[in-house]
Each structure stands twice: as C-alpha cells, then as structure tokens.
Length: 153
Image 1: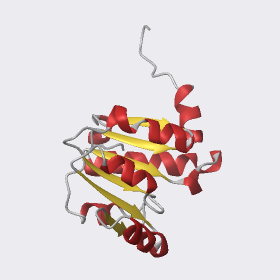
Image 2: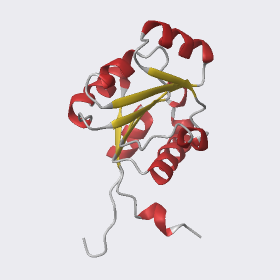
Image 3: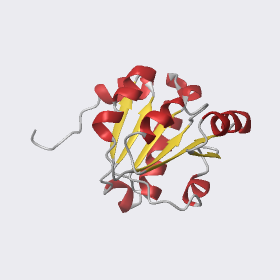
C-alpha cells in the first residue's frame, strides 16, 4: 500500500540533460536564502556556481578522492563524502535543504531510470526541499512524455 505522504509532496522535480542545462537552472532556481545540497559534485565545479547564489551549499560525492580535491580547490565551501542512496547520511548533515541538485552521471541510461526516480522521490519525501534538480537525460525524456491523467479531461 502506498504511503499517502509521498503523493502530497510539494517538491518540484526539474530534469535536465547534460551539464550545460544542469548549470543553466542555477540562476532560475537558486535564491540567496537557499540552503542547497549537491549530490555527485565530483570536483566541485558546479557547487561553486551554486555557492555564488545561495546562503549555503554542501557538495557531496561518493568518492573520497573527488571530495579531497574539491576541498583543496575550493576551501571556502563544505564538501562531504556521501553515498547518494544513503538519505540518512544526508539528514545527518544537519541542514534544512531548500534545494537538492543531483548529478548522477552513472545513472544516465534508460536502464537506470527506476533508480533515478527512486532517488529523487526519496530525497523529496525525506528532506522535503522546494525542488530537486537532476541531471538525467533519461528522466527528462520520460517526463516530457508523461501526462497526468485526470477524469473527464
């Protein structure tokens, strides 16, 4: 049986394809008062762009090597090792995130679409951000072809 809360989410999902689109969302979605979580930050390049527009950002990646490089390159920004599928670890960061950016390049194919949908839904349900922006061409394509059915319309 479905959990009623998961269908009452106010979180908006923004699917992008490629780095250019992913980064183009920043001026439109990130505001000065936002606290942003970026998942899959790699070396922190996009995290820096987000940091320029928000109150606070935390960049995360599963790779300790990537996080160490991001910390060295961008010492004024907080970076943490995080497995994207460990939402409890994201909660343990101790922030009330208003936006979540997800760059999961490894989940870019159609075979990973269910994983991507699960991931964005999990973050929306647990963290309750205003928006989840994800770089996933497969999700963008899927969403563009979805229509919410309404009786009589």
